[in-house]
Amino acid sequence: MKYFLFVLLFIPLITFAQQEEGTGPFVQPQTLDEAKGVGEKILGGLPEAMGTIWKNEVAPIWAYMFSWAQDTWNRAVGWRVEELIERTKAILAGEIEKKSPIIQQEFEKKKQETIQEIQGKESQDLLQRFLDLFKK
Image 1 (cartoon, rainbow, N blue to C red):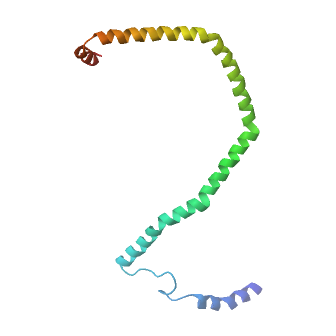
Image 2 (image 1 turned 45 degrees about the horizontal axis):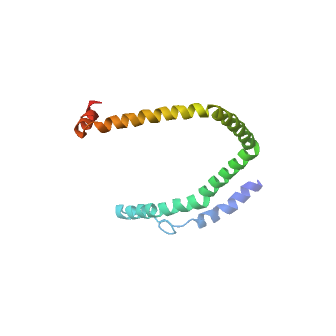
Image 3 (image 1 turned 60 degrees about the horizontal axis):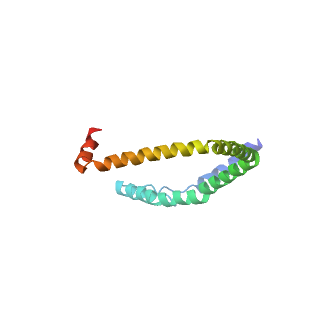
């Protein structure tokens, strides 16, 4: 019963709070040209609104998420991965030292083969080298 009386008292107040059509900040466009103007105003302000939202809301969230992920990585996983990388480097460094003379010999062989190939091409005339390009 209390609520019923409460509703009966405020119904007249609600009807007085309503405005007549066409008054207030938002007016319905009457013609197609007015509707076009309203659409242009909305689309004209859209890039600025999107830029403002991006700078003030989206970018700070992404920056926070990146710093959180980086911090979590460094605390939980990073030190383990760095240790694994250091052990792998140590193992590979030993293998490289063992294979270094073999690698040097292979490099010298390839170097000599390349020099001989270049000297052989220099002896050919320019026309023959040009024709060889199209044979391959």
